[in-house]
Each structure stands twice: as structure tokens, then as C-alpha cells.
Length: 163
Image (cartoon, rainbow, N blue to C red):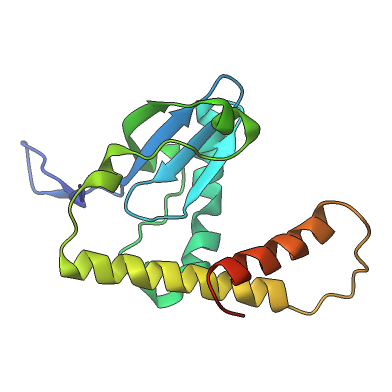
């Protein structure tokens, strides 16, 4: 489901099309916007526009997290650079605050090259996650979300079988 990076203009030469193929998962209280070719690059908002703006705003952070694997990633400057190719009906999980419905593109067969690219992205995301979790912090954690996040990291590391 790769998108062409060029838009053919019938009146002239090909023009660059900085489109990122995206999908929306629309719940009754929350919407998730995700980039189809870039797993893990998704953000939420209270409506479609807010979710799409959040996705655009997060593009540079996502690119930084995946490092050199970001080659080929178009960094959108506004929502007009997003090509929404699928809208999904969300559910209670969507409204709770987590994406729940996989886009149809996730069912496509992968060739060896794409599989290797996706495995590299997964490893880059885990590396960025580990670096953020291990970063020194002078903040004293009080009871609440930050302490739960540290417990969550330990849980995720244990689930994937490493430290």
C-alpha cells in the first residue's frame, strides 16, 4: 500500500507530492490518526482535525526516535500533507485512549525487504523507549502517572524477555 511520492500533472511535469498515507480510527469521544507506512507514528485528539494536527506535530519526534531509518519519511508541515486513505469505526478502547482497530494495510503481505524495514523500525522504537526510560532525572517521583510509567516499563521489558 505504498503511495507514490509524485503527483502527475496532466498539464506539465510531475510535481512532488509530500503526502503521508494516514488512517483515522474514530470513536465517539476520541480519534486516533496514524501513518500507514510508519508503525508507531500515531496520535490522538478529541476530533479528526485535532488528531491529524497532533500527528503532524509529532512527526519530527518520531523521525528522531527511529534515527537513520527515517530516510524516506516525509515530514509534513501541516495536515494538507496527509492523505487520509481509511476511516475506521473505533470502539470503547478507542474512547478509553488506545488505538484498537488495525487498518486494512496491516493485512497486506510483506516482502523480505519490507519485513526487514519494519523489524528495524520496531528495534529503533524499543531502543528509543529504553533510552528515555534510562535517562537521568532529578525529579523525585510521587505517586501517580510517572511512577506507574516506570512500573509499566518494567512490565514491557519483562514481557519482551530482556532488560
